[in-house]
View 1 (cartoon, one colour):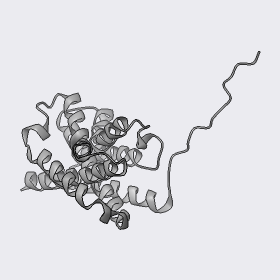
View 2 (cartoon, helix red, strand yellow):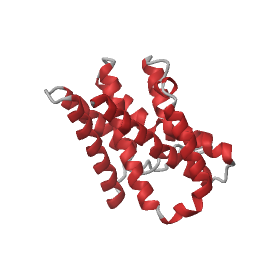
View 3 (tube, helix red, strand yellow):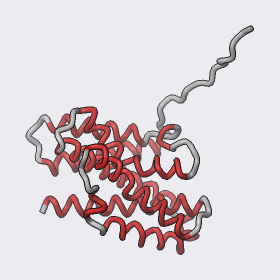
View 4 (spheres, helix red, strand yellow):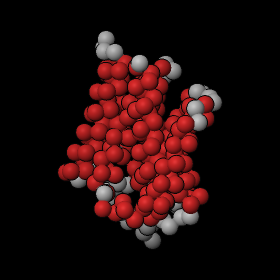
Amino acid sequence: MFEKLIFYFDLTGTVIFAITGAVSAVKLRLDMLGVIVFGCTVGVGGGMLRDSLIGATPVASLQNEVYLIACILVSLLIFFISPLLDHHKEIIMFCDAFGLGVFTAIGAAKGMQYNLGPAGIMLCGTLSAVGGGILRDVMAQRIPAVLVSDFYATASLIGGGIYILLGKTSAPVFTRFTVVAVAVIMIRLLAIRFHLQLPGSRKKNLSKRT
């Protein structure tokens, strides 16, 4: 029962992230294939990177093709209904926060399953959540949004830390998963609401004096 719930949460997060990737492609005016590629990249790219790094191969999204099929179908849907999404930006942002929380919890759980250290567990959670978005931004030839914008990857890192702390207790795995997912979602939504972000670097004059 627990594994089925995780699967449904994982699939839901994949679909949500595929939507955000496809929406980005539409904004860049890519063709149908471009929209599908961006949708699949954001939907399953982070999980692929995570599984490749920790040696969980073949990666999960290739063992169960339902993930890729879901990404393709959702991307095609976005391609055709994209004009209707301009009035639902807040819903998309909330769904994105949900995906961030779910993927962070799943990634951290997989890192702990593979007996990684605290840093590895946190990075597994974060890479699962933001890896696809980073690949998308690289393909779009821009600095990854998680490095220059608001509380996004930071929320995921905090979630990974919470999962590690809960792992030292007797809390069941599903409880840890739920607590971490909810915590990351709330942190992300609060960051959006109050415009929270990390301090940016200040430009300095690095030219040499002669």
